[in-house]
Length: 183
Ligand SMILES: [Zn+2]
Ligand SMILES: [Zn+2]
Image 1 (tube, rainbow, N blue to C red):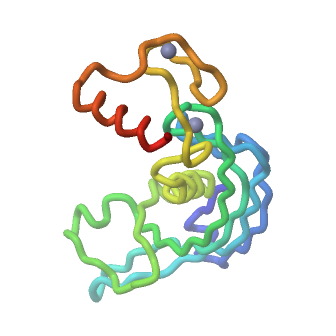
Image 2 (cartoon, helix red, strand yellow):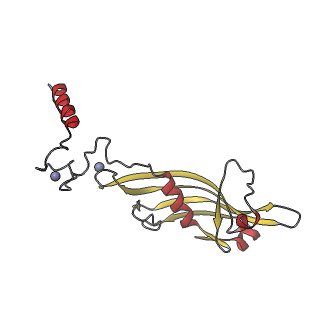
Image 3 (cartoon, helix red, strand yellow):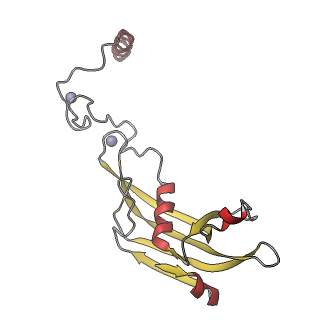
């Protein structure tokens, strides 16, 4: 969905959409596995920067809810990641700050982004919001054993005959300790 500044100038736009699975492309970081529900409101806010300078910002507020899949940080198996978030964002025309220097508006509850030419794509905004909301380290389970560094098997489901651990004596001492603890 595209928001055009010229149309939003006439009247704000309310939206309530369901974006089919796969619409939001997060590259290798995540895959949209289920329809994403998103509802909210887009409007133009005029930022008065001087007697003659008025900047048309787009304010986009809303809520989204859906299901993504991201690879486990250790074993790379896909892990379901439910997403459910709110956003309240301000988008300025591209280059406006480059020309007039950094002049922050006082909007503590909003974040500032930029729109290109004269419109903003909802899908682009959602992609960024989803990526920001993903945990920095997705794990399939807290004690995921990961992949064997030698042969690459998934140690959660398979065992391999590769040599266990590095030959560093400090590690061997630690392994000895661990076997004592088990006894
Ligand atoms: Zn894992
Ligand atoms: Zn192995």
